[in-house]
Image 1 (cartoon, protein in one colour):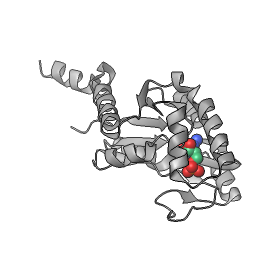
Image 2 (cartoon, protein in one colour; image 1 turned 180 degrees about the horizontal axis):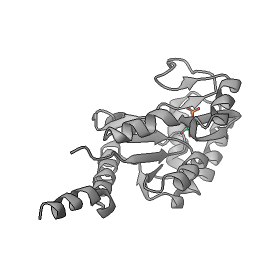
Image 3 (cartoon, helix red, strand yellow; image 1 turned 135 degrees about the horizontal axis):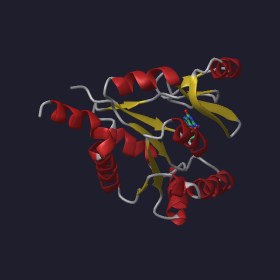
Image 4 (tube, protein in one colour; image 1 turned 135 degrees about the vertical axis):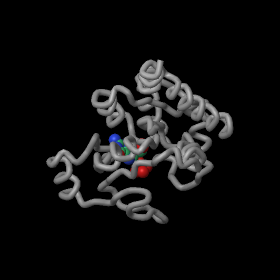
Length: 202
Ligand code: 5GP
């Protein structure tokens, strides 16, 4: 029996280690990572079609007009969005589909797909977030401060999510993530098909 997969929406301020947690989760082929589209320039090491589908602004706007985006948002002057096609195809195949998106997009998904599970990954503290951003050493003090205040704004939306995972220790955070998915599978509405089958064979 093929059960439909779970749609998982994950948001986190930058510097929370979201990428590291997801890399661990995606080692299992139960999960499918939805590759977003964006109009921002690729960073060094990023590959088109793997990290993002890098599009021109008119291509992106064309997709919006043709209802090709499940959600989209503007973030730091660029468009980011989830192409609609693969998401439902993969869910139908029974994969758990991960959307790694910012808060505005997550709120759109909440309206369109109420069955999705919403996970917010938070840093253990703002001080720790600052320390991690500094340690990365890629940004100036001014940019770090800007990212920290952006992070605080994003954290203020955390109560809109079903689960908050604090990324203090990687192993613990990955375990928490798996626990959330496991609980979601056990929810009664996820098991309607199973219950129907039991009753049909009674
Ligand atoms: P970055 O430019 O650092 O890769 O991403 C910036 C922000 O855009 C991150 O918070 C990331 O989660 C978010 N983002 C990435 N893809 C999407 C998407 O498809 N939709 C939305 N709404 N946000 C996205």
